[in-house]
Length: 147
Image (tube, rainbow, N blue to C red; front, top):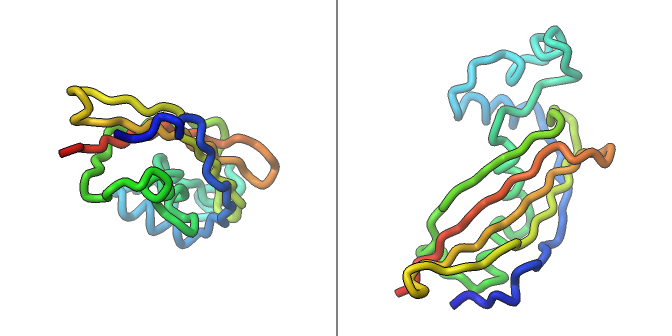
């Protein structure tokens, strides 16, 4: 069983720079065709300061730390037993090319179902820009299969 003492555990925050090429690549990968996600001129014409990060892009930022899966390391989980349960985003301000985003994360809940056959770890991520503005949050639920 996953140790519930990890509820409230905060991972080391880190900061990453949002590059234009990365945003363009992500937009292409998800099939996004709106030019505000790939063309600076189009983004500026639409009132943005630069190319805008497409929806769900903050997920990729959570993988930027030195350890891309810190919850696996901290909880000593076997990666082959992990399933992606769900993910929810809430946006407060745009993320733009050139922004410096600080990613903070913590474990907010651990619970089980089916008499421990399935365990769930709820992670909360916060994404803050270089001005100290909270631009997005994400809640992820990982499912860990026992047995």
